[in-house]
Length: 250
Image 1: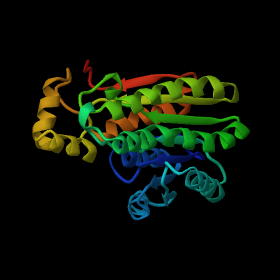
Image 2: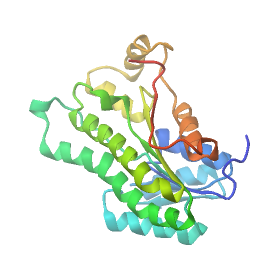
Image 3: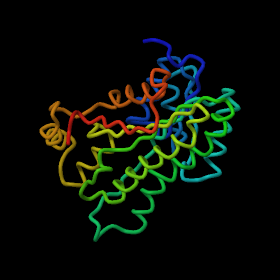
Image 4: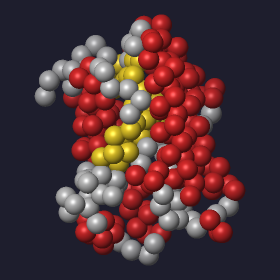
C-alpha cells in the first residue's frame, strides 16, 4: 500500500469500531499519524494499540464543546499539526414518530450532527492557518428517508447541508469538505437495527442484499477506502460533495 498520507495527521471520531476503526486503520496503513477518538477512552486506546506506532487513543464526548476543543489541542500538541478530520461518530435511537421521545430525538441530533459542527469548528482554525485540510463527514443513505429513523434521517440529511456550506466557506483556504453516505454496512450498529426489528444480523443482511444490485452488503473497509480517497490529494478538486456508497441501491 502506498504512502499517500505520509507526514499527515488525522482525527477519526467514533473510531473504536466499525467504519471509524476501519478508516483509522486505512489512513495509518498509508502513512498517517492517527488520533483514534471515541467516547470510551479504553476502547479508543485498544484500537490505537492494534494499529500500532503513530496512533493514539483519545477519549472525547464529541457533543461537548470544551471536550472537543481539548481533544483537538491535544492532537496538535502531540503531532504538531492537523490535516484530516473524519467525522464518523454516530448513534441510533430508532422508533416510529408517534413513539419517539424528545430525549431520543435530541441524542441522535446532538451526536450525529452537532458533534460535526463542533469538530469542524475546532479543526478549521488549524487547517485555515496551514492553508490545507481535508474534512470527511459520514452521512447515510437514510438521509433520503427511512422508516423508524426520523431522528437519524434528519441528522444525516443535515450532515449533507453542513458539508456543502463548509465547502463554500473553507474552500478559499484550500480546505475540502465532503461527505460519504453509506448504504447497508455490516457493523455493530446495523446488527442492533436488525434486533430492533425482530430479526438477526444474518437475516437482516440477507434481506438488504436482495434489495442491493450488487447482492451483498458493504464491509467497513469498503467505506474506509472511499473516505481515504476524499482525505487524500487524489481528490484535490472535489469538495462540497456527498458520495453515496450503497452498492447501487435506490
